[in-house]
Structures are given as C-alpha cells and as structure tokens.
Image (tube, rainbow, N blue to C red; front, side, top):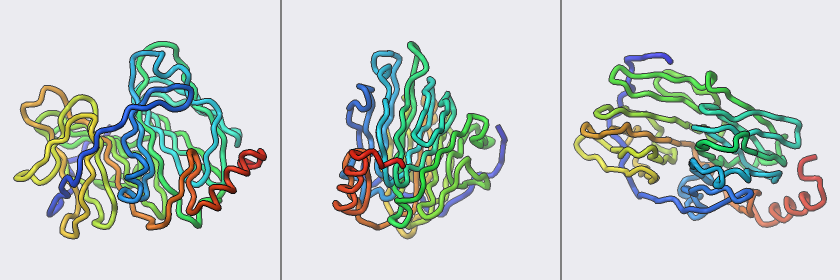
Length: 299
C-alpha cells in the first residue's frame, strides 16, 4: 500500500439527494443478497443497472452459488470482500475470486458463466455491480478479466483514510480497470473515525455511495453533512456547482466508515431489460431470448 499526502480538494461537495435501503432477495440457486440498485433507478443512475450486496457467515445462504446462466449487453463487476468463488464461462475462462480480488466481465453479444463457492463454511461477502454498454458496443465479443488483490491499487492519506481504486482514476492513481464511454469510477474507501476524503467527480456524471460495514458515513461539505447509515445507498445530486463529493467518518465513531463509491458518464439511451439481458428495445430482447433458446447466444 502506498501512502500519499495528496487529498484532491474540491470547491463544493455533492449533497445527498435520496437515501435507498436495499431489498432482501435471492438469486442464482438461492443465494441470499441485498439488491440495492433496482430497475426503477436505472435511468437515474445511468449507466449503472444493478448493485447487489451479499454477506453471510451461514453457508446455507450462499452454498448453492450461481450455476450456468447467460448475459448479453452489459458488464458485470464483482468485488470480493470475503470468501472464495470459482468462475467458469462459455469462452473458456476460469478464475478464482478471493478476498480483495475483482472480476470484470464484459458480456457483450453473449456469454454463459457460473460462479460457485469454493468453501463450505465461513464468511462470504462482496458486491456485484452491473454497468451498461452503449448501443454500439452491446454486440462486441465477450471479455473477461480477473484482478488479484495485489492488482488493485491501494493508497492511504496521512490521516489514515484508505482507498482501493477498482476502476477509473483519482488522486493521481489509476485503478485496476479503465473503461471507455461510461468512464466508471469505482472506489472502496475506509475512513477511520475522524477522517475525511474529497473525491473529484465531473458534474455530468451520475454517482452513488453505498455505506457498509456497520459505520455511519457523513456526506457533504463539513458545514452541511448528511449521515448515511450502514447498508444504505446515497444517491448524490447532480449540481453544476459541485465538482466532487466529500466523505467523512464521525469523530466519536467506534468503527470505521466504509463506502463503495461509484460514478460514471451516463449513456442517455433507452434501456430494455429482461432478466440477464439488457438491450435498447424489445426486439433486441426477443432476439437475445431466441438466441439463448437456440443455443447460439454465446457462439
């Protein structure tokens, strides 16, 4: 981990527009998770389509895993915090997701993959984010990248705040992944009590912050902050005068504040989703379903 004295300053922080509490659900073969970014929020948080948070010490909540299932038209980003999952796909890729690792998969025109636990006890925790692809890119060949823990840049500020730069660039550090068009910025931030960090964000980008780990997150300028309780997502307002966001941890907190921060350039294109397929219109969705049924989605 690198240490830096640089804390990129901003002139005005974004404010919290709305707080969202995730919805408990299950997916795959009965894996219990919390769906934080749901379909009704897709246009507001364009280009991001979904955010799931999962975390359990009970093997019964995750042991079924995610057997073979298809995708078309977007990218999946899996951030592992605890536990081990094995990836296999129709392109021939295989990889191990372990604590601190990241998987970035571009479904493109079609891929079938599985994510299965490689443990029968202990904690399994992490996030999965779906990032939309522009219409011009939806039918590109699928791609897959495993990023081991050491491949995710980590740096600390002098006051003890730490950042893992999963995607994009901030504070002079380029993340493990950079993507064109949507320009996603994905940061995993830990703030010990009494610390703060300012993150520049283009005014036109949509952004949200998901607080987790049990600590309360403070969002906004020092004189006007909004508390965000753990396991809540703060949708951040788009204001021309705001050039970034300020995060802080209460000085009297007993645990660190942790936040998954996500921002990106909106596509401003129609979104049509049917389960694991995300296209631009109903006709394209029908084609995806037909291709899958005929066994040619991932060929």
